[in-house]
Amino acid sequence: MQEPPHKPSQSLLSPQKEALLRLGPDFDPSPNPQLQVFDRDWDAFLVNCHRAYNRAVKGSHRTFPIQGRKLLSSAQDLTPPPLLPPTPVQRDLERAKVNLTRLRSCRPPNLMPALRTALRDLKDDSSIRICKADKGSSVTILDSADYVRRVDHLSDANTYTRLDSDPSLRIQAKLNYILLTAVRRGWIAEDIARACRRNPDKVKTQYIYFLLKVHKIPHQVRPIVSGRGGPTEFASALVDRLLQPYVSTCPQILVNNIQLINSLSDTSFTPNAILFTADIKSLYTNIPQMEGVHLVLRRIYASPSPPPTPKHLLRSLLLIILQDNVFIAQETRYYGNHT
Image 1 (cartoon, rainbow, N blue to C red):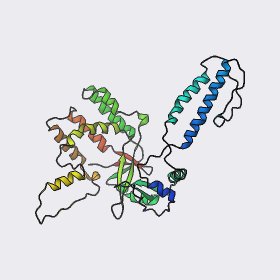
Image 2: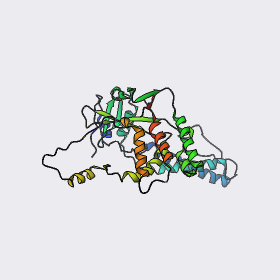
Image 3: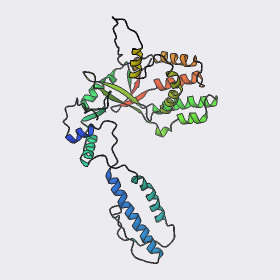
Image 4: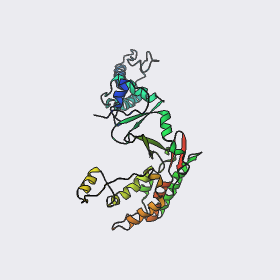
């Protein structure tokens, strides 16, 4: 069973909205049942079109019946065209039938009408923000003004710089130059470089969103920059694939809680030993990135099986991914200041 929604917001929710949010952030609502009704109406319309066509073949000049008047309300009676199969009308109908077959594969409805109405109302309610919790499988509801107040750390001029224009296309051009140079010098294959590039008309500005840390009092937020659609999305996937084999060889990496428990079980402690944990505030923005990139390259290229990618190419990709980090928040673009 999903956890109940956390509500730092003062807004009152109806029982239907409460029930909907209890389904959790990973709930996938089925398509609107009206699409299936549309499918049935259109299918009946196609059947009548074929019947009318068959009557025309037999020489009948009866009027063209239309049962799908809800779909084509302006058409009342149509006389079938001269017998010139296949007619453009018939080709268009066949094409429409092929497209509408996708609707037949819709999942059965998994929301009652009242919950679907609640979903639409929550989506249109601009006074609240619905976020996924940082821990667990619950959702959180915040007043929009409270949400904006909690993300005021973006005003820190030492960490973020406000931008007047969007440099995403410039970053994409810079990445394209790096990839083109690598192809010309034979460092990577053309198909890999092509997979890392994004068409300029499809480049989007990265955006930032926040997860609420409901396990901390007072509640804090964890910022997440989504690179989906951004200029370095595919290059990031390539670099991640190159580095993953070396991550598992680091003894300092903690995979999950089970590994921690097993490690503690195999460790001997003195009777007076004191265990403690530490947390670093704003860890990511305080990492010296140039030093971090240097340490990563030194480790993986000193390993028994270094990657086939030249060190200076991997270094250029790491720097453009980490440092050319532009995102949008509250209709304002920001650039992360890095060292």
